[in-house]
Image 1 (cartoon, rainbow, N blue to C red):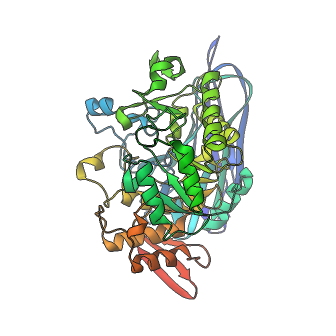
Image 2 (cartoon, rainbow, N blue to C red):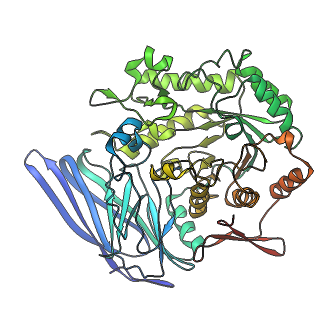
Length: 541
């Protein structure tokens, strides 16, 4: 039994079972390894064939007062702490017709992970922990290239199951079946040790502050609106801040080599020049691994689309549906390279926000796991972007570690607190200010370790918003405390003196020490501003 006491990890056994399909039939390998603090690597000499399954278990009791966190698949995936009776909500209760029509099973891990939705059963990818007050029991992966590490916890059987997502992969020789890490202690100690073991540090420690057009205008942007917003930002932002043009500048998602000529008649180079003239860095949104169903790219190059059973894979319902591109096609990687050359070297943008990245790797194949493909895609982006900063979004969480300067750690915020009741029953990646805050809080340990975190934007405006004044201020303050990306999505030119003063105060906030969280009674952030101890009640209305 794996028993954690404060200051000590007692030995336990990790019992594993690997099945390989060979020419002689099914071969099963079993064994066990003692678990202690630090790395646990199970590297086995597998027979020639295909891996059918790789699974292991550890007895891990959880007390009634303890909480469990399981990291969700990608950055948008809702990832709270649960009590011992918690359950990970999937989409199994939704009508199949609805799921199929809107491709609701494509945003997360629903198409390859079982969701029993039973009391006391939770799951997640890459890492998780059980927490007793300030005492953490961390379990994590050290390497996802051999396959995503799926952790499943069953409170009734007091068992942590570990599965490697590598079914169908060819083998024959040494294979890193499990690459695990265990630690217990205080929050900073266990996460510091994990990242030290992986050898991962952030690419940059430079925070970015500024503006995003998305929640102010959504897709209804144009050269005219961008220049208007730029003039407004010039009254509030500081030289060197980021002005990011989000979705809506392109003719269609996937058609990246020119701007929408009706909306941006002078092209994107003139937009970047205007941003630079105003004294800001220029950012641009793209989704490099996907294309809209009706895009020119999809019509002209159907052979560029990633296919499953002969049909293009649709990643979700945004823009009426959007396909994955096949990064194994050299013409696709050449197009991606051409796109970023144009964005950086011809148009002159400084930073890119790269979205819907999960679309690069919905599946693996016999030569490469799903996670291995995703990491290869992220390395491709790192290569073509060179030293230009990347803000990642919609990406499986651990596959971005150490490969992007900045990364989203939550779903999109909304213009209200938790969307309409009907929308709350759909997938875990839905838009929600409440869920964005909760997930940013429980993934706070990634900030400054994996990259600088982006908790998404905040709002101070009075119009076109349904958040209360308290909710707006709490969101703005929490975002400043939890990440290294601090973007607003308001018409900042409409700020009155009070809003400008509040913004500047938060912008200058540098909490003394790390932010702590009280999740025992509601959800509160505690931090020290100078000599003053302050508390934010996240659920305060």
